[in-house]
Length: 230
Image (cartoon, rainbow, N blue to C red):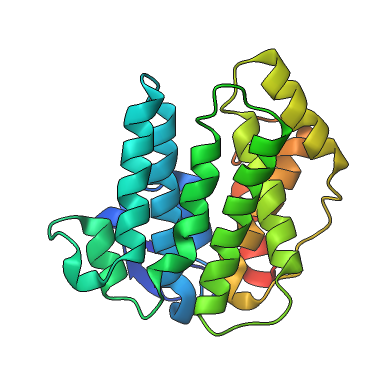
């Protein structure tokens, strides 16, 4: 399957990892510069894998074991990794230290708490934010990470709001969401996919929509942010 970015953008032949992502993430990823695309793809796929572990339900202990497996893989030498795991094979080819993504695992583990409260929400949001910041730092972009973490935190709140079922948890996330500034993201070009997803989340929140790509104008909006960053 091929898809093309507009205005003479590069043509990407999608791979199984890219195809495993939801459509909004795939579209956002298509606007990543070549230098940062592979690292962001790894982050996005890992995020989806971890979300799947947490969403399976059942025994929290089993989910914790699966999360611990990923934490151990991300922190051990690559030569110790098992073969045949597509995401590990992807990370193996990157210059980025996968340990930068350990906070993301820790963040998802907070969702397994029996009593999910403010402390667990803070841990989850911190993990999501540091995951994006880790990709940025690993790419040598440096600079102030505060805007990156702010943008990632707001996106994480929108994403989490659609996962919760308990009224008390939904109210907690809604309150935290309302306290965020939700300003336009000013991010390095290397993180254009994050800017796209954040803009879609902000748009959906303003319209009271649950999905990032709802409405006939969503694709045109995505293209605009992807090309110009806002």
